[in-house]
Each structure stands twice: as C-alpha cells, then as structure tokens.
Image (cartoon, rainbow, N blue to C red; front, top):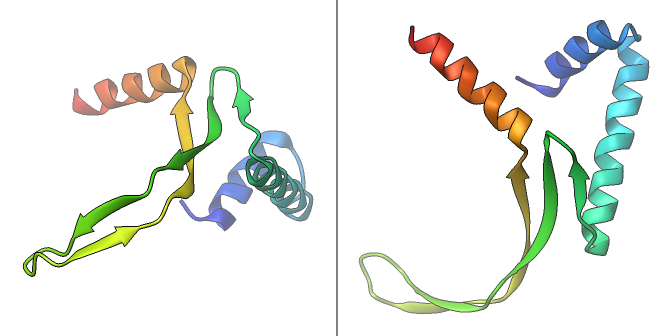
Length: 98
C-alpha cells in the first residue's frame, strides 16, 4: 500500500478529509523521526515500539573477491512488534490459508 492509499483508508476510518489526514500523518511521521534522531524510543502499546540501536563497526568481505572492507559503527532504527498486532497478523495468515 502506498502513502496515498493509506491516507484514503485513514481518512475514511477517521471521517476526516484527505487533506487533514495527510497533514496529520506527515506530522506524526515527522514527530517519530525527531524522537528517534534525539535517541528516544517511541512505544505504542499493542502496536509496537521504535528504538535506536548502535550497530558496531565490523569488518566484511566482498563476495567472490575475498577483499575486506571496514564498515563503520552506525545508528539503526529497530521496530519490535506489539502482541496485539502480532496476534492480529497471525490470525489473518491462518484465515488466508483456509
């Protein structure tokens, strides 16, 4: 699903205009980004949580050539799914298989 399709879906569920929904979604995504850039975690009970983790520097190999390279340490975003979302997705998979 693309962003425009998601905005349509949310606008119908929230009984909002597409324009207002788009503004709200952009503000939510910007807020999440700002929190993660500061190093804060964000938790939505039942849905999941976003957190920032540090991936350590490491040495890797280029496949086929065995040349090595150094990958620097970097910050990455991690998402841990919440129980309610996990259960809902698992239930939808069971329904599709039948």
